Image (cartoon, rainbow, N blue to C red; front, side):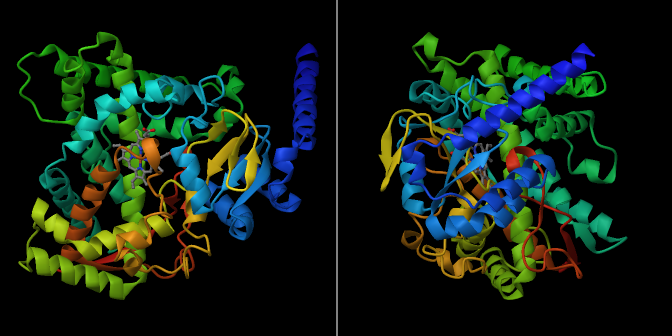
Length: 503
Ligand code: HEM
C-alpha cells in the first residue's frame, strides 16, 4: 500500500513539475517562435512514448516550423525544459564556435543510462565540457587521427565483405544492406582503433563472435530510451539487465587487456593503430598531470568504436540507397572509378593518389551526408551566461540543440533540398558555411577524415564490382525511412537492395 502511494506521489509530483516548467517562460524565451502546441504534444508522444526514431519525429513535427523560422522553442517532457532548436546556418555556426558560452551538458546535467555510463563514462572526448579538459583529450587523440590509415585497411575488408555478399546473394540477390555495411564498419574501426578484429563480416555467414555479441548487446542496451528516462528501472526486479552488464564487463576487460599489452611492451612492434599513436602522444607529454588516465584512454577507445562504427555504416548504406534511386549518378560514379582504377575484372584497392582523384564519388558522399546526415542533431548545449545569438537574447541556462538535418533542408540555403544532387559540392566555397554533417569549431568530429576515406575506398570498389537498384516495392520510395538506434543516429530501416555482379 505504502509503495503504491509512493508511486502515485512521484507521478503527481512529476506532472506538477512539468506543468510548472511549461508555464514559466522567461521574456527572452518569449521572443523565440514556438512550435505549435499540437506538434509539441506529438513530438513528445512519438519520441518518448511511441519510441519513434529521432529523425522520423524531426521530419513529422519540427521541420516545417524550423524551415519557417530557423529557430524555435518547444517543451521537452523528458528534459522537463524548454529547448531552443536551431536550423539557420548562421546561428548554428555561432553556437558551434562560441564554445565558452554554449557548452555541452556537464556530468550533473547529463541524462545517461547506466549502460552508457559503464561503457564509455563521462570522462572522454565527447562529454568533457570545459575547453581545457576537452583539449587534454583532443591533444592525445588528434595525432592518431591525422596520421592517416593505409587504404588497404578499408580495401581488404571491403574485399572480404564482397565475398560474403556474393555467397549470400547465391540464394537471393536482395541484401539488407545496412546489415552488411554495419559489419564492415565494425571490423574497420576495431582494427583501426586497436588492431582487434570483431569478426563482424565473418559473422554474417557463421555465428557472431563473442566480442561482436557483447558489443551488439551493449549498443542495444545503451540505446534503450526507457532506461535513460527512468534510470530507476535498473533497480526494479523484472527490469534489471544483469546479462547486459556482464557483457559490458567482458568488453571492458578485453579492451583493458589490449591497452595493457600496448602499454607494457617497450619494444612494441605491432600495428600502428589509433591506440598506438595515442600512447605515443601521451609519452611525449612532459607535464605528467595532463596525461590521460588508463580509464580515460579506455573510454575514448570505446567512444571511437561506437561513434565511428554507427555513423559510417549509416552513411555508406545511405549512399548505396541514393545511388540505387538515382541510376545516372551511379553510372557517373562507376565511370569515374573505372577511369581512375581501370576496368580489370578483379577487386582493386585505390591508392592514396587515386583516392584524391575520386572527385565525383567524393561529391556523392558529401551530398549523402547533407540529405541524410548520420547524426541528425548535435549533442545538447547549455548557455553559460546571458548573451545574444543573432537578433535573439538567450538567457543563462537555456538549452540549445543544433538541428543538422533540418539545417541541411533549410529552404533559404538549399534549393530543392530533398533532391539528391552531388553537383552541389562541385565548388567547396558554395557550401562551406551551411553544411555541418560533422559539426564545426573546436568540437568538430575527430573521425571526419577517417570516415570520409573509409567511404571513398569502399564506394569506389563497390561501384566497380556491382550495379544495383533499390528493391521494389519498398518503404523508401519518397524518403529513406529510419529505425530507432543509438544517440538518435539515422539508421535505415530494412533497406533492401538488388545487386548484380559486374565480375
Ligand atoms: C559519417 C561519419 C560521421 C559523422 C556524420 C559524424 C558526426 C559527428 C558530429 C555531428 C559530431 C559533433 C557533435 C557535436 O558537436 O555535438 C561528431 C563528434 C565526434 N565524432 Fe563523429 N561522425 C562520424 C564519424 C566518426 C568517426 C569515424 C569517429 C571515430 C573513429 C567519430 C568520433 C567522434 C568523436 C569522438 C566526436 C566528439 C569530438 C569532440 O567533442 O571533440 N566520428 N561526429
